[in-house]
Amino acid sequence: MCALESTKSVKLRSFGETNKYGVAAKDLKELLKKGCKLLKKPMNCARVCTYDDGTELTEEYFKTLPRNVELVLLSGDEAWNGFMDEIAGLLSKDRTSSQLLEAARYFRSDDRSAKRRKLLADSLVGLEDHSEMERREDDQEWFEGLLPRFKTKSAYMKSNCERRIRGYMTELEVAKISSQSPRVKEEFAKTARGITDLLKVDRYNGRYFDRSEVEEKNRLCTAQGWFTCQGAFDQDLCKSLHSINPYGNKESRINFGTWNLDHRIEKKRTVIPALVDAVQNHKSSAINLTYFYRLLFTTDNLRLVHFVCHKKVPHLLQCDSKKMYKRATKTPGKGKRPRIK
Picture (cartoon, rainbow, N blue to C red):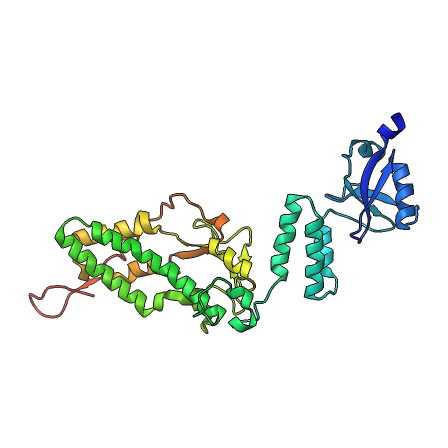
């Protein structure tokens, strides 16, 4: 009875293989002997390490192992640094995409660790890349759930950006309605219309998400459709190097919806209140519409950020008072009033 109680059951696999075998042993020496015989490995220089992090077993460590722990049998100059080696091994071999997907799905379904399953799931998303396809008939899965009017990926992504930008107009409308005095309300309505007209001329800046946009400076993605996080409002870049290609597959398209166009100088807390204050003391004709338009609707003030980098705290950045109004210049002639430029 004591001998049975001291026996430990583990799951053992050979280096570079996915098949696992149950092995029962009372100590490390017996495990090495049984493992080498089962997996047809030479006993000379054989050793065992943990599958999770690659820790090599000693007799003392063997005694502390939980039941059915996963182990890897190594021989010669073989090395194992943990389960991430399995993903690296997948990508380093000369396999087709279908073979890689099949292997990654196998590892994912066979893995009980939530962390490893998440990493493998992310790897699968990257492997299932159909970004070279553009039209609906070529990648119908990508268009699932989208209106039939979208015939290309670029057309949908452009519309997606336009919809986000249009949403910012709503807060302008709210501010216009809530203006108190009739004079301020009228002047603010004129100002809001002027800013909206500038937005319409730029076609709601849908080009930011449109990879077919010819001018690289006018889009936030590469010609292949890759977007890179620009980092939090108070950072120069994204330290985590977040990136995504929503053109690649349906899941990436959906995940891209969690990315934010974040106003560095905050729209609701700062830009719109500054615009309201400006109109209260000046006529709409004196307001620099282009300046406020750029703050509200363009990448002069917008940053594309992964949701992890989207800091929902006060930004404490202010509008430039020198740019809020048109410059007043004097016209030639005596007694002439200054004109607004």
